[in-house]
Image (cartoon, rainbow, N blue to C red):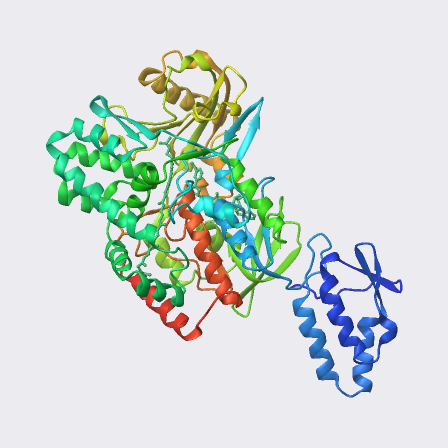
Length: 615
Ligand SMILES: NC(=O)c1ccc[n+]([C@@H]2O[C@H](COP(=O)([O-])OP(=O)(O)OC[C@H]3O[C@@H](n4cnc5c(N)ncnc54)[C@H](O)[C@@H]3O)[C@@H](O)[C@H]2O)c1
Ligand SMILES: CC(C)=CCC/C(C)=C/C=C/C(C)=C/C=C/C(C)=C/C=C/C=C(C)/C=C/C=C(C)/C=C/C=C(\C)CCC=C(C)C
């Protein structure tokens, strides 16, 4: 139970300290006191602090009793009390200066926070780790700057409506220099099928159809459907699909585009591919195309998501930020602070405080409590509802979500520093390797992802070296229940096997060129990213109905919103950026910073809830 400033035992001196963040509200309080003739209680300013005369607190009650208006006075005290902010470092307890607290500074959390801040909200981001970014963070070792996760950046161009990373940065006055990647990924597949996904769509189409000339028309039609969806998406202003005034407005302005999206919303890429393509090898190639962005095959990948990535890579192209992916989160965090909001690191949220069915604050590992009008969780839904909310029963909506979606496996990540001469000239930046058997695509350790960001930005490694970031799917169960010694031994063994496979397939001499090696397991992901089982994100349990079952940002708990990859539209940096934009819009409407219609809201939320039951 939190204590209010008025319940906090006061120091014995005549003056007590008031935290910096109380300043504006204190004057409001003082104005109230003046109206009861308490002129002598004027607070004294001292540098960045305000010194309050101690009797103020009691003075209210005395005056109120004498004036026989206890209720009025106490109400005014209580209403001020409600608005007061408790600075975490001061730990004064209950107050509500913040419009929103965001738990976690992944790209989802940061986009939600910055978008809210530019709309005029006061936001506090609480991050468990030392730097922002979560799986889009970075770390430095011996002159190497490693991206924690993927280095393939969608949504980072300077055109269209879907460049959500560029837009999120621009909203807080940031622009990052980017290096265009001439390709998205080089596929090395069974039967020595090699396909380079060129930046130019026509070049990619020619390369793919040169391998499968008999399927030229089918390939044309499948990717053509993707473009239809992408163009519809790209024509919309992207905001919260849970906000009716915006949603109906878009239907009114762009009816054909919205109907196109509504039509494809419950469909999966694999079914559409099968309408046009018969050759099982081409279908397997499309499975691999989907797998690298959804960790499942095309039959389970929502068509809207597939279209988004299969086209944005040609429309805006893949662009790498100079200095590394970590710069995106750093810039957003700086932009947030520039807007007058705050971010605290080493702030581990242990629980969400719920009172009378409403989320009102958070409790940190150090016992401090911080309160806000809304709470936004960038932790996964499994962490949010399984750990942060201390409730006996999972809300029905969450129960349904967990029936439809399970935790995708995590990754084994190998970060290498290697001597440059091991890479042939003109090596591509990103590779996907599945050597012999298509059926290994979704099997743990079956396929290998490889990024070499130094191909684009040599400043990430000391001269004469490259970075190799190798990752493959792996489950936490594989790494549990062993001694530290066995764990370390297994890490070495598995990593060496993966490196040997790459040596054989792509880079002879790779083992002996290594100058630095760091191996992370699903346990590492769990520990540093605070993700349950180190999961990469949600994946459908069975065959989903496209995106129909994916929840948006509101939750069954009033005042609690989720953002990130366990919200619509799912995994991926650009996807979580969209989730951040949607979340900020919905929260802003609920805060009165955007248009809102309570009647339409209730109707739409009920309708969307019903749609999800059809998934
Ligand atoms: N693994 C990869 O290869 C990789 C790389 C880059 C990006 N991605 C994408 O990023 C997506 C995830 O982005 P996101 O924004 O949803 O989240 P995220 O997991 O990247 O970030 C969540 C942040 O919340 C923090 N956090 C969690 N619980 C907390 C708590 N209780 N208290 C304080 N802080 C807490 C974590 O420390 C982390 O910084 C993934 O779906 C993935 O597609 C993945
Ligand atoms: C409301 C209703 C119901 C209806 C109505 C209708 C409408 C209007 C609708 C609308 C919709 C929308 C707008 C939608 C949107 C969507 C989106 C934006 C989406 C997005 C997505 C994205 C994604 C998914 C992405 C992903 C990515 C990824 C994951 C990436 C990854 C990467 C990696 C891992 C890398 C690889 C590497 C190598 C190869 C090396």
